[in-house]
Length: 281
Ligand code: NAP
Image (cartoon, helix red, strand yellow):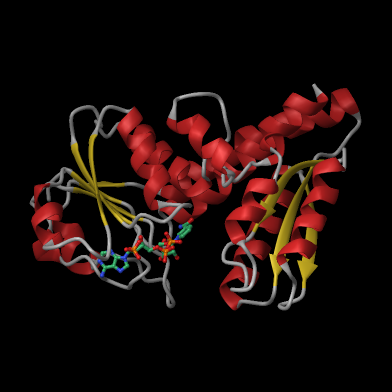
């Protein structure tokens, strides 16, 4: 399409990080403390190892101390809850991130919920979800927050727009639907039991793909001029939308890689810095 906008996440992430570097400097100058973000990795899922490393690198770029907590694959829910409790009570830790997914034997949501709201910088606690859904002050789920920030940064109108979110996970589909609803979009959430999914995506002004299946959304499932937001990040840097064929029809799209991913990390850093500012300034 003519005048197509590439929703450049790398560029936006760099802008966010530049601001955070200054804010962390201020925290250090005024309090003499280097804020830290704890990342908990249970097991050695290769994708999770990579994500945790990327988050550690981002911490270092903005001046936050990454506190890496590694736990074995056979960790129990009780052991993980005890570790989270320890980090909740540690005054030097401003934010706690539990890398998703955890091994099957662990009750992930119970562990998410045990992260204290003041340190839940990844917005995974149900209390955080409830609060930001109601428009109250709480840390937001990082990927949904990233999607919203990208759309706002590039001035994509949301009010009254038909948005179709494909996927309803607790960390992505559901919270992004709530954030977009709060922006007065008309939101439809589709999932694996949706009958005739393309019927819905074809009506959409904006499609948000959060499925976890490479190139799942086809070019003929979307209308001309659609805005495509691809949160998918599958093996080989492939998104959930067949961007090669669908992007040319769009008025704007997030590339994969370089779209939602970098901003997600930047938003996680931003919320960690806010937590540190609240604690130390
Ligand atoms: P998830 O927990 O596996 O959820 C996938 C969702 O897609 C579920 O709600 C599922 O429906 C739905 N789905 C699966 N097959 C479908 C089908 N055939 N038709 C319609 N819906 C279907 O995944 P997630 O954690 O939300 O992640 C989704 C994607 O985002 C993945 O590619 C992941 O790597 C990526 N991701 C990216 C970031 C980032 O920062 N860029 C962060 C997190 C995740 P049911 O509920 O009915 O099962």
